Each structure stands twice: as structure tokens, then as C-alpha cells.
Image (cartoon, rainbow, N blue to C red; front, side, top):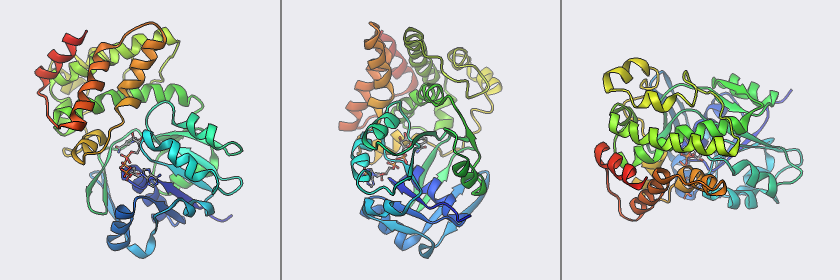
Length: 334
Ligand SMILES: NC(=O)c1ccc[n+]([C@@H]2O[C@H](COP(=O)([O-])OP(=O)(O)OC[C@H]3O[C@@H](n4cnc5c(N)ncnc54)[C@H](OP(=O)(O)O)[C@@H]3O)[C@@H](O)[C@H]2O)c1
């Protein structure tokens, strides 16, 4: 049977990581991204690095870099890896071009992207996916995976086999909505990490920042209860227990959550990268989603709402917050 052909719409950190591994395994992958990013792939190729496995380099002649969505026409699977604010435009780009039977897979964070794609692409299967680890551009043409982890998608045997053969662990899940709600709880740290200006490991090693995350998660869990949402258990601790663990002293946290801190020393959230590059962030699809869900159920989520405001302020005028400063700010909001 011929190998399925892939296109990646939004070839940034996650798109280059996923598409790069598939290309290295011999799949035909069309990388669709902004012209400047595609020029880098054409000139330097793509290096996939990680601290826990050897780097892989794909020379330019092993890559198909495309500036426009036309390149999606030949794909059996289109992986959507734009930030959430770009999903509607990405769907509009894809709608007239997808091959009949092409399957679209969203590997984005947030709760609404799959629904947006499904609404815009009737007649196509759209699968929800989830990337549980951190990937950043660590240099021109290099994407770095900060920790190991297992991708998750709605079941699709061919897709699962392709990723496994490419060396990426993947799990088929029938509860992706619960998975996405659980992932959102973790992603509430993206804003805190971005405002801290610190690498993730250092930021999560400091109790004051973890208490900020615990405040956000407690609000989110209360809102989920009101909405009847039961988030999946993705890590060693049940979602309801995590805020307590986050509040432990630094030495205790280091012992209890050793696996959580096994992050590459340089890894940071993609929101930090967005702020640094002066790009809009995904805050409205993360903390903003909790605020909206709270409002829909007659509740408030003040710490999350304050973080939405602080990140929008940082988009306009970057500043960093110490842990105690940020914790005091979020507490004052409640
Ligand atoms: N990075 C991570 O560690 C990580 C981990 C798990 C999940 N995620 C999720 O994965 C998604 C992608 O994140 P990312 O960090 O990979 O973002 P990213 O590095 O910004 O990559 C997205 C790329 O797509 C480009 N793009 C947007 N719309 C496009 C279009 N219509 N056509 C062509 N290119 C387009 C963007 O360009 P512009 O910037 O010019 O718009 C950007 O270069 C997000 O939902 C994120 O939350 C990320």
C-alpha cells in the first residue's frame, strides 16, 4: 500500500516537528507556511532536535516548502498547526483545495479549532489531535522538542501507523473533548511562563509562579464542574489534585513532581515566543476560554481574566513579572 501523503498547514514549531518526522520516515509532506519561514527551509533544510534522542537533519532537497495552500491539494492528510486565531482563515484556504476524502487533523491547543474546521469543511473528516509536549524554534531551520510525550488523536489506523513508523508515539482516544479540556488546564501555564520570561523548568521550580497556575486551575475546575465537564487524566495526578501539588514547597514539589520538571533547561512556552516576536498570542483561546465558560454559567474566573488582560498588555508593551508580583496581582483580582 502506498504511504499516505501529508500537508502541514502552518509550518511553524509544531508543523515542522510533526511534518519533519513524517518526511524523515519517507512520507511525501508539503510544508505550507509564511514565505520567510519557507525560504529558511529551502535554504537550510530542517533540523529536528531533542535532548533525549539524536537530532535528525533533512536537507532542502528532501523538503517540499510551499508558500500557498494549493500544495494541500495532493494530500491524504492535512495537519492544521496554525495558532487558534488563524484557524478560520486556514479553513477558508483549504475548503476549495482539499482532495476528496482528504482527512484534516487539528494538532492545535484550545477547545474550538476542530469545530471551526468541521463547520468550514463539510464532507471531510476532521480529527482532533493533541501535542502534549513543548516544541520551539531554537534556531533558523531547527525545531527543538523539550520533553518526550505521546501524541493523541481521534482513532485513525493509517495516521497512527504513519506517526509510529516516524518514531513519534501516538495514542488513539475516543474522549478528545475531555483530553482537550485537560490540556487546557496545563496550557494555563503558557501565559504565566510567558510573563515570567523564564525557561519552563526554572519557572515551574518557583512556588510563587506555581501558585498562580494553581489559582487559574482551581477557577477552571470550578467552571468545568458547573459546565458538567470532566477533564481526562493525562498525567500522574488527577486534574483535581494538581493545584494542591502545585502549592507544595519547592523541595517537596521537586520530589513529588520530578517527572514534570524533566523538561529541557531551555524549553519555554510558545506564548513566550509569540511575545518575543511581537505576535498576537493565543491567550483568548486559553485563559479566555475559561473566562467565557465561566460567564456562560453565571460565574467569574478573576485570576484567568486578569491574565488575559496582562498578556494583552504585554503584547502591546512587553514586561516580565516576578512570581510574588504576579501572584499578588492575581490574588488582588479575586
Ligand atoms: N509550540 C508548542 O510547544 C506547542 C505544543 C502543543 C501545542 N501547540 C499548539 O500548536 C499550534 C501551533 O503552535 P506553534 O507553536 O507551532 O505556532 P507557530 O510556531 O506560530 O506556527 C504556526 C505558523 O503558521 C503560520 N501560519 C498561520 N496561518 C497560516 C496560513 N493561513 N498559511 C500559512 N501559514 C500560516 C504562522 O505564521 P504567522 O505567525 O505569520 O501567522 C506560523 O509561522 C497552536 O495551537 C499551539 O497552541 C504548540
